[in-house]
Image (cartoon, rainbow, N blue to C red; front, side, top):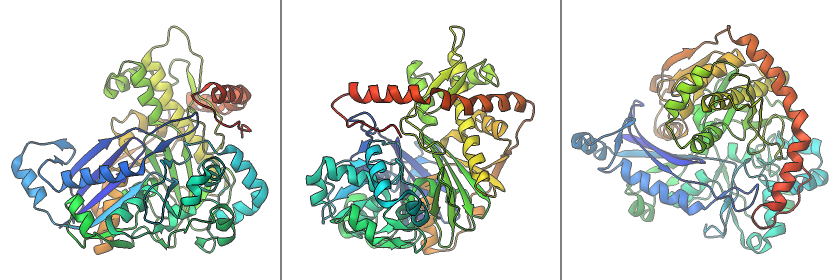
Length: 519
């Protein structure tokens, strides 16, 4: 028996087949790109999510597989995987997203993605004035921001009223997959708690007055917890995917919370650092902590709460640099960055290349590379990008601690944990020891764990034991303390210039986009 976990991410969809003891039997990836039709707009067609799920499911349960982390031509291994019976399916995905569909679940337009889509700044300001800033924080746990669902629905109502008039369903990647697999229309509590201001995080239910105000025609989905069964694979879905009819499918959740589950970071005091296209931080707390600069949500498991932060870019910057440099391997660039040394030979970068989420909450923030000279190399720039992410992590961690969070253990996960340098820089900059588990696949593995939990009682510590601990090196700390002080000063010193350039970008980019107040 085995479970299948699939995650829909920003840059790829990933699947994993996992044995009942947590052993990874096979993995597969489907790279994809998002659409950026206008400055600040980031979208993706929801049917792509389903097509990639079907492709992943067929590969992972068929004869063309990747065993463990490596491609294989071993027919015996492939036959062994194809002979495994799938007992449950787990799903997760980026979010919160806005994928509007009709009453049959047919998408009406491309899905608007999470906080990296910054189109709704005017609607954020308008809704904040209508509903009250403090009222939103008290009821929802988070302020309206580019991460919020409500302003994006409002943007659609103003710019594409014909779409909103036909909309009856609200999907995110995990709920869309669950719907296509089972016919069920459900959403998990955690994803709902990020759908500000539609969800009441105190009563843990949709808040009807604000939902009617923002989305009067949309029938919001019944709520489940991520590990609860949403439904069972239908005959139609079985024909498409190759999965057996009747296999249970869990409700699923947003990828970062699935990542946290994949490494056992769900106890009070745990902090998960997700190294991916963006950087995400989740601290599990005993009770709601309300602070405007961060997000307070319900957790992935019943009875848990989270204080979270998210950076709009991290690995996205290193991928961008790699392409600019002619696409050398990341291993080559990591070696050159290692040689550059702490401080990147006098470079300091603000990683706000797609605006920034927490703790500055500024969609019009812009990336800055300070101290650049003709003597700097690509290794210096790559090092500066890694250090910029680490400085952003420290900024978020200090905001969490200032709000009253108790950080006792840090667990790192995601593709960025490979290679060692990035995680070492983060530990050196923050002074935090990080724990890295044996399996760092992330959200797809967490989705598989949720699936296994729906049909059994797996222990994540047995599934995924600790592989290494990364202790901070105190020697570069004085240099990093100095850089951190400069980092905190660099944003306010360049904010007005960044906002002016963002306005210029909106007026000179493709098509016409509405002005933003530059919040």
